[in-house]
Image (cartoon, rainbow, N blue to C red; front, side, top):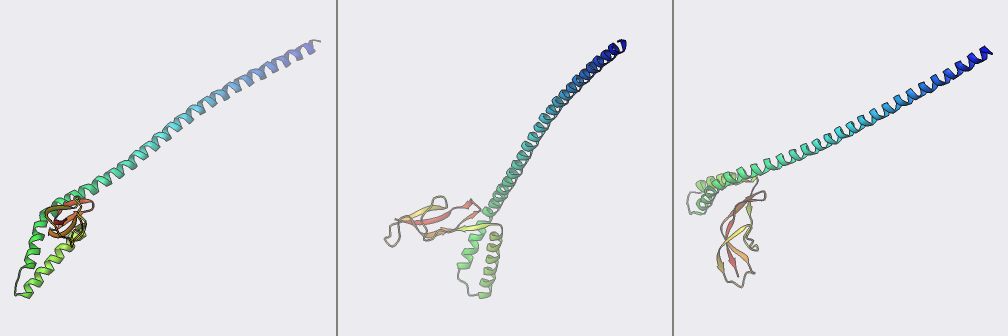
Length: 178
């Protein structure tokens, strides 16, 4: 009987020990799950932070590139605006009468080279003759009534206009009909 009682006590102790072990294992699993949840939240926070930083950096690169292009166009426009009177004088010199054809041909070569250089940096002449007057590109200094032309049509270009990209360097000075 004593053996039976001892066996029963041992069985009860084994059951209690198993329950205690099970409870401590469950507690450890819950702790690990809580830690895992915290680490996932940290990981998600770091990932969101990384994505925001990458987007900010991408926006920064785009902004810098745009600013660089604008600065290039502004500097080029300033330089070209200082050169345009020289170009105008070249055109006047080419239209002057001279008997020395080799001189005129040399002047024409220099003028062509000057125009090519301007084109290479993105300078374009503003088309005006026989176009509809546009105050964004043209500066009207004369007005003429002539039924041979349409309304607000440019009849004569008194001074050429130039632009670089979308930036106007100098408006075309024009005569407008009707």
